[in-house]
Amino acid sequence: MSGHSKWHSIKHAKGAADAKRGKLFARLARQIEVAARAGGGDIDANPTLRTMIQKARDGSMPKDNIERAIKRGTGELDGVRYEPITYEGYAPNGVAVLVEALTDNRNRTGQEVKNIFTRNGGSLAEPGAVAWQFERKGIVLLDKSAADEDTLMGVAVDAGADDIADLGDAWEVTTGATELHTVRDALDAAGIAVASSDLTMHPSQMVPLADAAAAKPVLRVLDALEENDDVQNVYANFDIPDEVLEAVEA
Image (cartoon, rainbow, N blue to C red; front, side, top):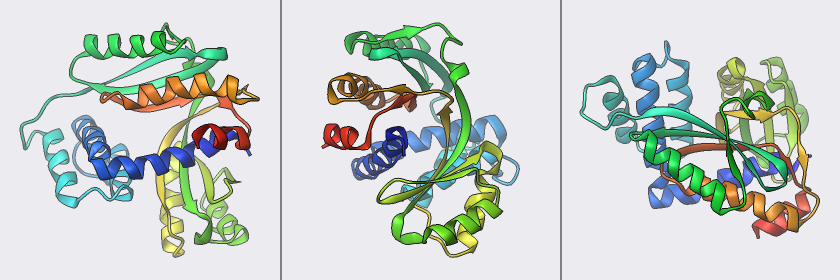
């Protein structure tokens, strides 16, 4: 099992902590606004909005906050207009990094992202330099107690899931981008509690980081990027042994 997959689980736990500070809600509201502006406020006709709303519900975001974000996106309420932008770069040790941001000032965000890479031993790359190494996938996380492997496998695979990984204290179900909602609905219908579901960018090739000395500078870049208010998602193609990742995160 890849340390990259374990990182998904760790980030989910961090997200729960962020929710207590309100930071996660602000980030989710921005994502909902942009999705509603791009595709309308009807979740049946806007799968991206449906994904963002489900992500917000998984993060325990209040219903009123979700509805206000949708209305800001559709223009029913006034609000700042955000636009999506993707940055590509390299962390130390040649690890490819993809950064998805939502910003109301491209120049400010671009400079901030560039500075984060530079200060932490990485570098910003030209568009297209690393994006080809990633593929859009769906990820569903479940607590280990939600279902045994055979039951989970039967429901998820029948619904179109690609793979199931054991993260130790959680299950990770991987789907195609368009199958995410179908798999999530099937798990809900089967009474299998889902911790979170979201779209991600999955790397096609991995850079092995065998020890803490190699892992720490990479994770430092990723953590710094995720602390930026405009940054929504950070993806990287590292593979760290579980015991090294756990030691570093501890």
